[in-house]
Length: 369
Ligand SMILES: [Mg+2]
Image 1 (spheres, rainbow, N blue to C red):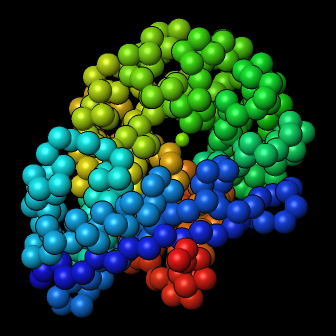
Image 2: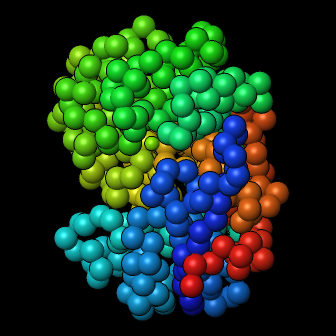
């Protein structure tokens, strides 16, 4: 079996956000307007699919169609190490990240989908098959909410069955003090038995992150995700020394050496390799193995749960899946019938490959020309 074609396209959509009027453009934060869909076809007619996020979306499409396809076109889609070796040698000899990592992620995910369909086994099973059901947290805490709406939105998600919630911080004009008030409002709204995570998406300086961590030490947070500019591993390690709140990071790191730095500098309690950004399942598996060696769990951040669920279910140190309300909705638009969380858990479908049926009409409706 050989790789025959790679097609990729930029898409946009809109989502419903609880308590907000009308639909919100994109799938979450203001910059998250576009995403990339990719399909890889083999000479035997099997196809695999993949999705990645908004970062330089048009450049990712151009990279796949103009640079990646000629380099990998004769390779067997199941021999992912050979594919990665070819890409590293021919396209990325200086170990860059960004567009090349996003493009490799799309290609690799689609190849695992093909391999699973060919074998008649789910990708999670090919990765090791540690489990078939995962705990789930919901990313509900959109920055558009005022403090009262945020607390109400948290209560709605608990009523819907979620037992773990994540909210964004670092986006409010009130600075870290208002973030602390928002965190406390959510904790008071949902009580002590719900897991609560916060995510700064790289937005704090080291001192701001220390002030916020100190202000909410008593709020029993499950983790503080990506608090610092640049995901600076040295500064994260320093923050870890100053707080009892576990730190999580790694969702947008573009290859295993960036993830290794987070582990080796003892910068994180939880590693978050996301196959949609780090170079696909092949690279996420290496990161998960690295984390195993250091007795660290791997959890999900960065969205696109229909893909990361296979990493977490496949690996023995896979932990909790993110159900991002925006990217969860986009996944259901593109792939109707795919798994959804129930009572704080999600069960994999058990279908071959990624187990996703593409809605061609939704693809056409969301296409950016
Ligand atoms: Mg995150």
